Amino acid sequence: MKLYYNPISTYSQKVLIALYEKGLDFDSEIVNLMDADARAQYREVYPLGKIPCLQLEDGHLIPESSIIVEYIDPMAEPTLIKGDADFRRRIRFKDRVFDLYLNEAVVTLLFQGMKPESEQDPERIEKAKFHIATMYSFMESELGQQPYANGEEFLMSDCSAAPGLFYAEQVAPFAEHKNISAYWERLKSRPSIARTHEEAAPILASLFAKDAA
Ligand SMILES: N[C@@H](CCC(=O)N[C@@H](CS)C(=O)NCC(=O)O)C(=O)O
Image: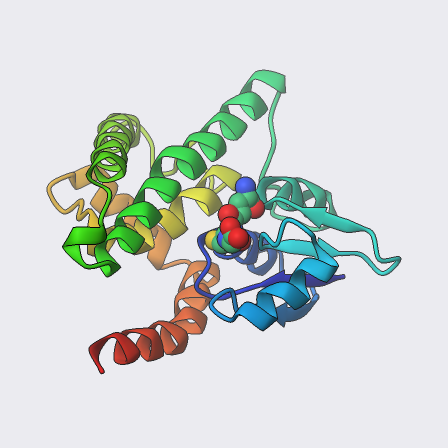
């Protein structure tokens, strides 16, 4: 199987974390979303142009990060979506809200912050800040009771939380939230997550160098 992705893309990182946790072999192709030609070329593969997307040997496509994690989950340990139907629902719920209200909101702040102030959208910024504050309050309370998003074990919901928190350190610092900070230290120390940071670092460094030029 082959993963279309980019090391700095949050949704790609979520899938990479799951693949690295499981030690699965896969081919990969980096899609440069900043390049119009590369974007057009990738739309020939997946018309929506979204990454990540997993392509199977027979050419079948599996887009959408959560669906990819669900697809690979039975292939190897550790299992990332487990338990009875209600517990699995809880894992999926956290995966959803981390995607929609943490990850999306953090990326909005990141992109808005790259624009000159006159081109920023105050309404989008305000909504993103509201979503992040609400998520931080929810996470701080939940993580007071348990080390990982859904309890004692690292699961799909943690794969989803990590990429948002990675960028949140810059645009929505959470140092005052002691439980989230401890959770982030716990996540960062996992080899799967550290590896995604190492792979993103050179691309992020070159982006910021261009910004500074
Ligand atoms: N719901 C999708 C979201 C994927 C997504 O928005 N990926 C971003 C990169 S992190 C992307 O492909 N953006 C390009 C675009 O929107 O055209 C998932 O979970 O995979």
